[in-house]
Image 1 (cartoon, rainbow, N blue to C red):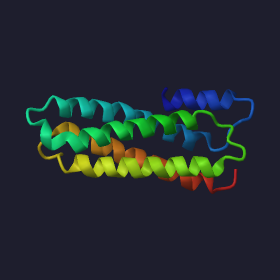
Image 2: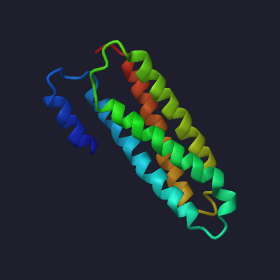
Image 3: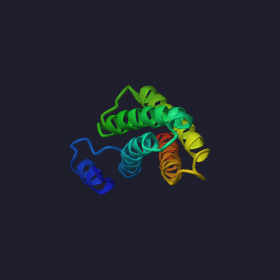
Length: 139
């Protein structure tokens, strides 16, 4: 689901969710990260010497799972009384994205797909960080 579609959905939502633009950017970054991390894991598995990429593949897949869960949770805007849970999920997503970006950056010189993945993970961590900051602003 693209950020444009999410914004349109939020505009038509009966409860008119707060910070719809920030939420939709975060959702878009999360699902982009899912796709890129999954593709990076597959590309790593296609390399000749996979043994030095095992940790990278595992982080790719874990990061994709966490980003997918985060994006899905954010698409349901009615979080009355669950702010702490959402903040914890965003913090978890940031941590996984940073770890995956760090791991992939270590392979970026040799494997272009890892460099692309690191960029997507850093972008997702940034979008989640922005979302956390936005949540602390008045609606």
